[in-house]
Image 1 (tube, rainbow over the protein chains, first blue to last red):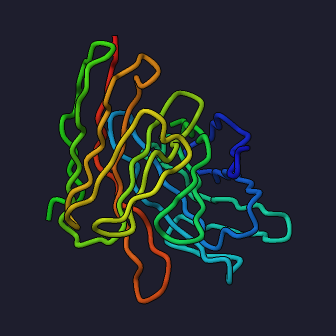
Image 2: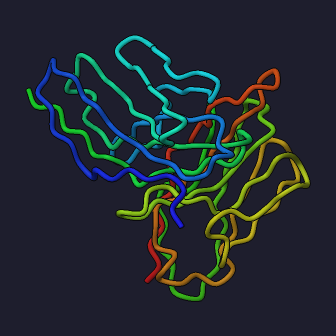
Length: 111
Length: 115
């Protein structure tokens, strides 16, 4: 029973264009959602998060949208840069200590 | 400020051997956890701790033991390694900031191969 799902294993985008990564969840108890990126041979690094009391959060090039009724969140990266090429994971939690991760989407930004 | 430090970075074990993966954090975080990353499976939670002396099981706890005697350290023990435990292991720490959720900080990972 996968509680957090990322149905697109990979995504290719031209440099400068928008990247949209999607994530679905099933557990209605989740109240905090996060996006991480991971380069090979490194640990995941935090990108942006959103609380369930909001439907949008922006930080520079990154915007996360949350649709609670659809149990869906998305990460928009604009403009996309070559350094964004990495595996992106979404995660969800209901208590800050137990994060449940999706399977990841490999983003490739083409120069 | 080192953040979350994992040792070793790489390890090869023979089936049946035991070992301990070390994790230490210097951020005074209450919460610590262990994940494993396998191809196509994402990051799966093994065990977690909400404070010294308190641990609990995550999604895939079988074959692993943990303890938390101090706030800083959260070692993961493999009592009898099996090839199915070949994976990349990540330790993470987090805290409850003024009653609000916060992000987890991850170590650099330990790549374990069991032959």
